[in-house]
Image (cartoon, rainbow, N blue to C red; front, top):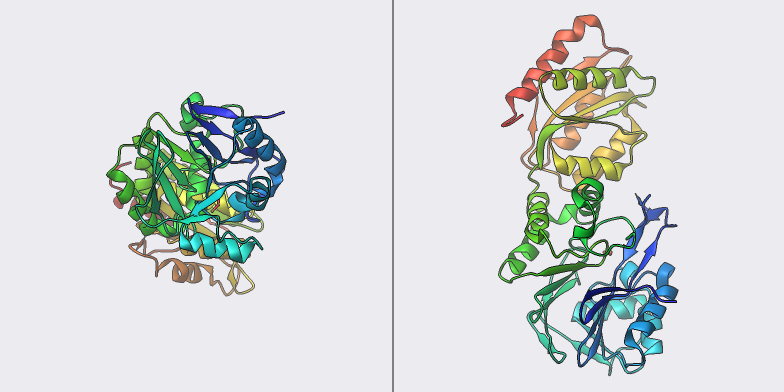
Length: 401
Ligand code: FEO
């Protein structure tokens, strides 16, 4: 039995949902699952856009068969070779020996690397701006390197103004029967997962995302069809505006993300007190225990908020391990344009404050607040003015509260 969704009169979603996957790419938890999107265009020629992860290959092949209804599959457009979109490529090409693979040269090379599949003689290698006429539709292929791998290309259907955007504009989370973002309360229920997806998957590649956004700015877009999550047909500009912010490392909101690493609760207490005092001044706050919250959710929050406070105990003469990992992960994602302060704890030979500062200082356009609040085991009443000073230092560096 098939499970497809109609996108337009001649375009169909034929992907699959995986709600059993614990860690996407082996590193990002996906408690609400993930969707692997694939689309079939039924024009004079039938065109399949990308395949799916092996986890949903069976339902995917059923969906294709049902949608084709006995027709031949003329083209398979391969936009991205990461295995979550290419693992079922062999199965499709075996079932459909008539199919021509449409891809760029880098994708063709990766097909050879990943699989023992010879597409010579059944491939159409496209270049930047190449077009393919499928009958009523004219497809144009554009490169989008590093969104999210170097080979990535995106496809613009000039006829219906639909952009097949590969990983761009994706969202974590399985589709729950809906296919369009406007069928759900996206801002309330899915924006956090869209941000977590963006920040962790392509957050490092802001300039490359910017390059893609510039390319697509010159065309009218009626629909975005990404490889994960919902299809967009309403408020497309609003979602693109989020990508503008994220890819230029511009905070979405003024507020303070406080992330702490605490062994016995004393560092946590200092973080809580700081959060309370910031709130008393009307400042938005989000507090994370880095030993419990996933790094991917804190990295997503970092793309949202304008100011950070990192609080860590000293451990093995360094930063507490989960904080150390988080800060290096954040640095690897190229986070920039933020104001940052630190709280250090150490019962003896404290080092965490200066070491945290060393990781953050080289990042681009970071304003580091000079004074580190230093705890010796626990925050004392006598240090209350130090917390107040930190609050005022943060407030002084806020454009809007
Ligand atoms: Fe969804 Fe880069 O693969």
